[in-house]
Length: 229
Image 1 (cartoon, rainbow, N blue to C red):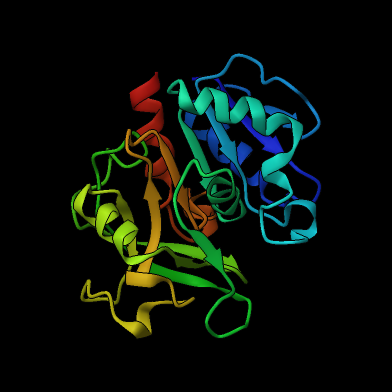
Image 2 (cartoon, rainbow, N blue to C red; image 1 turned 180 degrees about the vertical axis):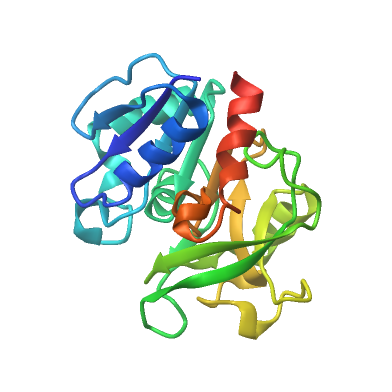
């Protein structure tokens, strides 16, 4: 699997996801600067976490109009898988590759801690190694992770099985207390209609091996590798 990680001014998780992808896939990962107009040939595109363009205007708003994103959007529409993590999720909504927006956390505070997620949709190329309703522990680190969309869009996401991850408690219930940012319906990650574009606020690359304190995020990368290998 050949993967590319897009790097924006302010990205700070690009190296982390590169390390995770190389550890799982065993192949070098290409880092692509935002000013490039074309990506090299690749099987997977990753938009990493961070603060692209300093999060000016809105998180991801400026990054969505960078040179490289024109090619990212074109390739996504042709079927190339795209994974957006945290700031990358924000960029995906700003490009309208995914619906909705990410608003300021309901607490108006930056949240950085482990959260529990329920795998709502294992039928994507990013989640095929998880079980339906599996509970996993993944860290979040964001100030703008409050997922918002109108009710018809939310109903459509639910009805089409496009809610991939949801914030839950230890019993697997989507409670207000388990929600770190106020996201509607405790949504932590969604995919597009073809289930080839995934946006998620939690950081799977931060828990992909025991040395980091856990490996629940590893299956995101293993799932992609198994599908695209």
